[in-house]
Image (cartoon, one colour):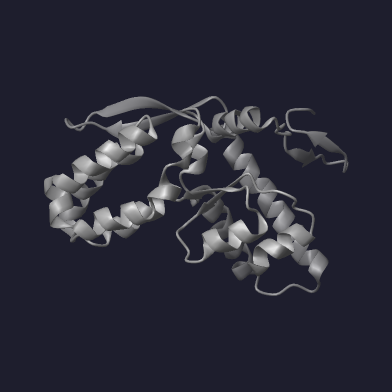
Amino acid sequence: MKVFTDLKTRGCQDILIAVTDGLKGMSEALAAVYPATTLQTCIVHLLRHSLDFANWKERKPLAAALRPIYTAPSADAASAALDAFAHGPCGTKVPTVVASWRRAWTHVIPFFAFPPDVPRVLYTTNALESVHAQLRKIIKTRGHFPNDDAATTLMWLALRNITAKAEAADAGLQLIYTAGPDGAARRREWPSRRSGLSGLARLFGLAILPPIRTSATGHQNPAGNR
């Protein structure tokens, strides 16, 4: 609760959607400070937790059996898929997985209420964790900073580089190549995070501002302007 209280003290008046990895006490702490916030469980973390109950050979079929649940077109369809999984061979073999999904169900289904391009932004915390990992690596490599300004500058430069790398992936549709059953490469299109963020912005009446880049002369320009 202290983290959320600090956020509100520092000026964050509202959180629209919070995606968490199932940390105990999160829903209670969030409801106490930001009662109107929608809490979404990270589906990737829930999947990883589910796979922990299976041995190595059983993980692939278990993951395939769970897929119809979180890829369902609606919350009702997802609930039906969960019931089907519970009565199927994987569900009867590892009932603890079914129980874990049912316990988290209230926070599993919120993203089903959004348009199709939005869930990709909401269903996992992986994107943010990747940013944190890259920042930790940079800080660990440097080791020591003469003052706070030096640390802040390095973090800003690192975030600018991370943003630049993500911009290419966030433009339009990403082309993802996967291996088919015959081993041949197959191409499929996947909506970008930018598309999902734009969908969220439309739903909540917000505007997504372009990232600010600093030119060699020190002037700040919106991304795309030279």
